[in-house]
Amino acid sequence: RTPAAELVFKWSEGISGRLHGGSWVTDRYVGTDLVIPGSDAQKMRVGNLLTVSNGNDEVVEIDPRTNQRVKTIKYDFSDHQGSVQRLPNGNTLIVSGYSTKIDEVDDDGQVVWSMETPDKIARALRYGLNYPGVSKLGKK
Image (tube, rainbow, N blue to C red; front, side):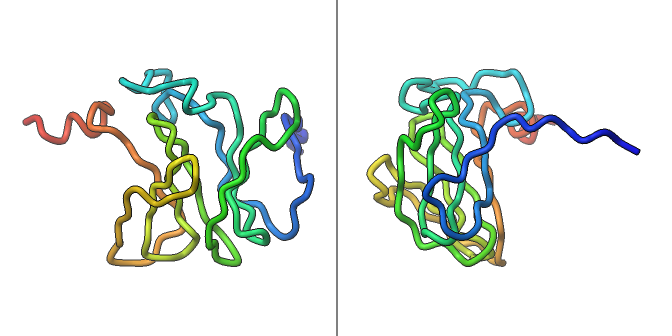
């Protein structure tokens, strides 16, 4: 029998419904120790946690050091799923959950970029052109 994993952080204050797509805000490429070129750790608020509150139709940002909500962005999420990712410029990438739309919103929640996908998706991540896996695509 595998022993239970240690709980690292728990937060649910003021939430009704489900939380989905939680991710730590980091200035590193996902799954690596490589710093994203041009990332602004202060604008990104590195070290915070982003999650989708489906029941409240909002992106919730929590500072785990203080256990406090630091930012809320209203967004029309589906009843289930969804994802959020803080981008190097401080904006947030959002998928509402099993939809065909990906939005980038600024810190005020205004859509600054949007993309329609051919099929429904539940989550998305943005990788820059300097990400090793992407930069190798153009090389032969």
